[in-house]
Image 1 (tube, helix red, strand yellow):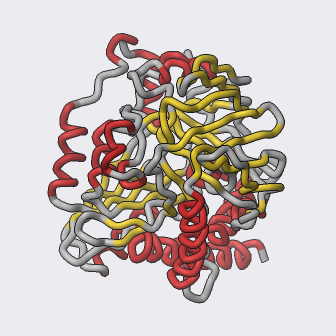
Image 2 (cartoon, one colour):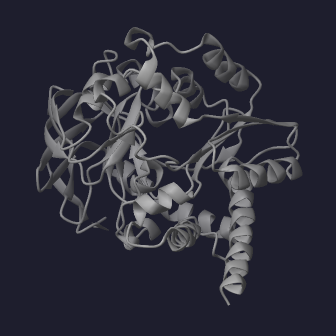
Length: 409
């Protein structure tokens, strides 16, 4: 009986892997015939990475360029390298990203922690010095819109044990795959059609927000009283975007947000994060930030504060906001009411803000000089059913946007 159940799970999982890989290639990155495909993965994610490579070649890819980042090697660096060298990034890492952009390559990244506790015991301030696998050139490519790209979750056993500590390891992995399959709409008869329908709904929300011509947003809830000013030409988007060459793609699978770039000089008040986040290998929980004149001037957390403090001193823009995003509770992620300890999933379950680089395509050219600039872009979640989001019009009138996690517009 046990072997029969195990075989059923294996067969189900293989179907999920193939279906998710197909969605990532066809809908997420929207790989085009003749493109190079950059695929970023980690040890433990081989089955999905290989399925993506197959799907990409079936879509006509010229070459799939696989890069594998091993967090255990980063851990060795944290333990033994000279701390003064931790900010060093080999120049060919950035050169590779720029060349991929020049060649109009597609890019796919797999998310989800593979060793979530490995950095426990490492000095948090040291973790803030080493951003790898992130490189600053990747933000340049996003803003230049020369690559059709996407990020998608890849369940692993260690990630599953973090999310479902009460389950046996095999049951936890099965549960994670089942929920990721649901969240990514891979359980639909036609996942691409299901996502196109959801995108249409998010575009409609973004259009409504644009017509309001809001001057600012106000977040109010437990531990939160935050006003985020917007630029005159800030425009709302969902994750249905196009490259400069007209390739429409979805940068995130799943995606449930509408977002824009705020005025980096006009964030005031204090905010408490509603979900933990992983950043530079460290888990940050209970994050509390106070802003004055757009800058994060006080930062504390129950865990991981020193890592984030180090990061916010990395450059002039790292303590200011580059994004604000609104998410309702009707999404498939939000309805699960679960913390996944993965920014891609958790940020699409709750409204969030991001320290660091702004997004050029969400702002008119006349305001590009005012967008926040940084080598960082760190999202953290600030929304919940208890956090009310209110729009502030240019004349000062206040308009309810989200109450109890539900849209009011």
